[in-house]
Length: 285
Length: 267
View 1 (cartoon, rainbow over the protein chains, first blue to last red):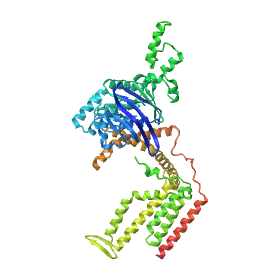
View 2 (cartoon, each protein chain N blue to C red):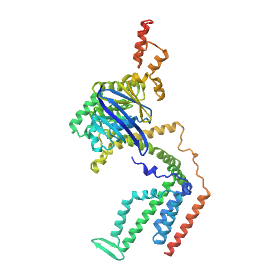
View 3 (cartoon, rainbow over the protein chains, first blue to last red):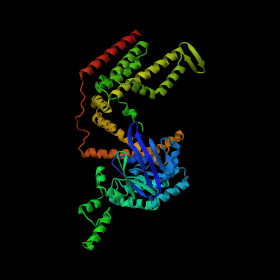
View 4 (cartoon, chains in turn blue, brown):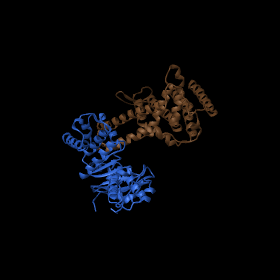
């Protein structure tokens, strides 16, 4: 049993009097792993993440992040330590860049948390280096950079605050294929460095490739919690919530292929299994 | 962010006032404000109060809506009235301290001033409460039309107005998103000195402007790609039709104005 980084218990959130975005949600986010959060627009994913970062307070139930409990009665002052633990990278995070230079923008977060300029600068440099941004860009205006670079600067702006939990809202949206691949391998590296990651995504291929566990939301309720393999082994569940399995899963299914065990989730696994099968003749692998 | 100022004001309904031509409503509102400024005596003010109450009653909008408009500006109103009361001279002096004095004339002035504020604010609230922003934009565009003679780009202005209205909710969403993103980076918008709070707006305003300029450019390209030519005459999807009730309302307005002039002469 992996120790949970976040625990939701009977969590509910309503906008206004009776517009419930989340109802009676209970699940955990395991520490040190990458959890994929999927669901359609309006399923409550973003609300759940905003609750996790204390940007919203629960209407009912509790959120516990690394031992700190948040309820409807939590005071705003108590949320500051929470923000130190949780780094939230919004969708199109490059839209939040504002400072004159890349370095100053990345230093913004640590300084807000009370770091002095020297240590903020250290944290910023470390974060930018961690994300592979060349030092030559540090003094440039963030608005001069390419889209992929801007996104990495924005990501560095959050990483510089040294969070234990990183929330990524569709981190690859709007990037070209190279940019997407680069970002995904960065995410894998960050996880290897011990960060707990929650990633909102619509791309099942990413879920299959990167996620250790999956949570599916629909209509403000949790409808699945388990591993990607479990999820994609349940075609009825996927269909009921209008999710499409990754191409590899569909392909193996269409072959009606006994050798597909374990079920291939990514194109790479599928290719390896196929190659083995083709080389080994009719054998069962 | 609070966008009640522009959108939440409209109170859906189907009353006579709701159905009046927005052009008439705008002109009438303007005229009402002019009359308020010419009302000096009790009788003429009373006439305007009666007219306003009648319109409010006809609009079938809960009174709280109108009160909300006044309440927002209560601070300014009270402050101005206080200044007026303390620094006017004439009549009986009740209290004096240095250059400040409370006099009977000053009190009358202050009360009249407050009344004027109430009338003007509530009068214009009638419009925003009973007219959708789109109708208002159409009315402004229609009322500007005569200025075409002066080579004012009326069509373009109308287009700008409707685009601006269209993007208010979008920009509001964006503000919320950027503010959330900066809050996640440790900004606390609700604490600190006034200067500090003003400084906190920089990380919100700069991204907002960048996004707005980008959006404007994209929209311009998209419009041109669909053949938009600002100098062509344009037809309208929503047409404004002058009805009998509009003529009737106009007649009432003229009648009230005549009565007003009569009262002013008599006063």
